[in-house]
Amino acid sequence: MQLLDPWFSDFMNMSFVGSNFEIDGGDEEYEPFFEVDAEDGDEIEMIEAPDGYTFQSLDTWESPGVVLRDATGDVIGFYYEFSSWVEPEHRGQGLGALMILAYAEHYKDHAWEIEREKYDCGTAFSPGGFAIHSQAMRMAERKYGIIDPALAEIGNESSAPAPM
Image (cartoon, rainbow, N blue to C red; front, side):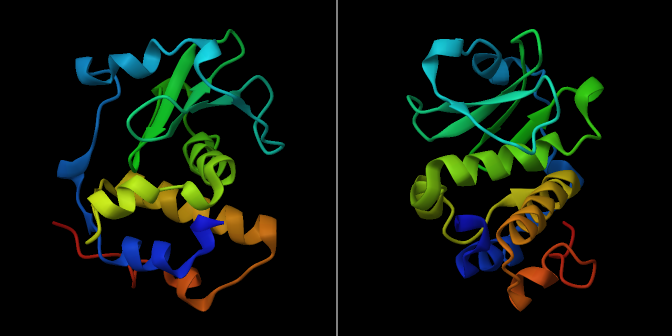
């Protein structure tokens, strides 16, 4: 489970956090995520998913990713190269963190493999992006019963990277 691997906590600790790193999934550049065909990837089984939501892998893209679908089958969120987006009306249910957990569980040892090379010195997160990655790490800790002291510090105010 890559979320529980020490490299992930090291990566998080060397990343920048700032509001200037926010993304807007409604921007034109993110349209391809909302046009993903249901046949273009596998459904990722997540017992933690709230009723009516499903996760689908993006296996044919340059980097692997996940899209989130609502009960009607519409794409309402995505996770790709450390960026996560959930439509505003679906927020507050932990779906962003669940997408990250689904990504980690589905891609296993290959999770973030490409990104580790591209972003070997960390990346930049919005405060919300940093928070949901931290939340996903805590979900994985609880689910797998693994508590790494280094991971326990991620997401605490005292250990968060300095804002930019």
